[in-house]
Length: 636
Image (cartoon, rainbow, N blue to C red):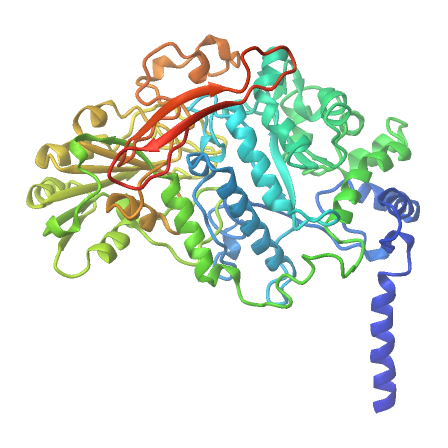
């Protein structure tokens, strides 16, 4: 019996090895094309249709599924959207993408994406977890053309060039720099011109070809041609009257011009919406055939019956299906799922070192660095900030947001959370009395503010509106499926009452998007802005308030004074007063605004040539000098 058992174990091991050596597509010495051609030749029609689904999984041939996961500012295996796993799958949570944009730092964004991808790979293959997916639905390359957009929190800002730099850096960080293998695949979303929520499933975003080229598509273009992304999600809406899911630009421009040959996926339920909302087709078979002809390689929807009917009716051929799934199989090849090569540098993540990455001190420091660099100092009258601890005896901390780190729809469940109140208590320690009040019931906020040497009041939105799908009880809040109906901050009255009781008031605005905080700007001496979700939110804020870090964050979107300063929500023509490029009014805070504790001088502006012709590159140089009393960073 013992000898038979040993024989069985050895045979099982050899069979396991043979699984990755029995087909030519497992052979890493062959070209990518040869390997994919072989794999397709071995697949049945049923398997080919199955490969049009979200998870490219072919068990008969030993092809492991790639899986997929959200990852805008951390791996999403918990949080409000995926809450069933929140108790046992913690993941590192960075500031929202909108806050990462405020850093203006592609190098930092690259490091963050590299970390997120590494943690994701750990969760995918570590024996204790075996969860997550290697196709990461990130970054969001959409542009924040209007601050009412409910998903503003997911974008990097309103500028196409800055967004393209951050998107490219994020994609490269996710995928890694190995010539053959990717750590994870970065799937950009949502193509194209998707910056409104109400009516997104049936309306059209109409714009000129010039604006398509120079603005709305530019971050996607750079994400593909420079970043190397070969995965992208189409948007729900139409573009110039044609649903993005079936638009000719997918083949004509994205594939033929930009060299895209990977995975093109529909958004969740978008296939069905072609019939129910866009009214573009009479039946599912016709809709499926149109998607495949347009270049869609994956359906995030119920689709199998429709594709089978399309084949039976002769609307789409098996060869066309084969052509489309090539991109999905190529992604699997890049992710190392078609072989077990020792050349894959990512194959041992979570295997050789089983320490959870979110428990490491360097992880916590990276999140803290990202958070403090995302803080924008909006106002600092009479140099109230940074606060001098040695002069403080009594500090009032006011507002519910001081005790909260709230997850958004695309946030994971953090392993720990540091609130603003936590960090202030840690900073001040013994010898400074701190009073916290949540609201102004019975004028308790006024009382605490009047008592204190300084009052720190924390206000802001709730990232998922503390409500169900498509619901936002507070008009100034928004999220996916809900655009904001107001730019007013419902808690501004609390700030103004605190300021009236104590002129030494610091307002901490913790929000996912801009607010028209005109009264605060007029009366409150110091205002800082930071976005939601970071597990190091409190430390990031306290590092700035107490001068451990000189704020260098800069706004990436124009903050208007009044909602009537904005054009019609459905007007996608930028020339009609949109973004800093065409807005002619006086903003509350301009694009690029952000103060520092020090000052900088700019001198000797010069170029490397006196004349420039079409096709030339002009280099502009300027000397920047710190002329103040604090060390600091400057966004030029």
